[in-house]
Length: 205
Image (cartoon, rainbow, N blue to C red):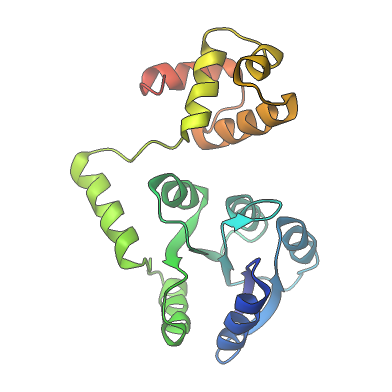
């Protein structure tokens, strides 16, 4: 089984790659979104499993999860991260992650869990599994937007331009654009009008 690994901590990446190589063919072990894009572009023989960190120096691992799902539709992806807040969990799952494992997962269990995922399972670390179960008990998933994204979205809904939002929040125009891109991806919309409709419908602002 061909496995791809995305992990920005070089020491941990090396250790995990060694563990994975006991059972799988590790076809890539990289530490950033840019490296992941370059390596994935060069893979021509398919990919069965991808293990992706989420907090990366040049972006989010969810970008890579979406890319893998587009390029290799049959590949199963597993988030492998220290992030266990609701926003990170549900964003990764919506992006296409089949499983969500925290980095304190015992190394000796990692291969077993990935094999289970490849067979159709959805391995999740206990805290994450409890979070998912609670979301079904309450009938809704926790908010997808960060506090800053909600604040920015509320200004857009009021009709402010990007430049006005930047001035109001004391941030750069590029930062505003980055937040807007994230908001659009999380809400699965492609315009300000759509984002406004979703925000009002779901009570996000």
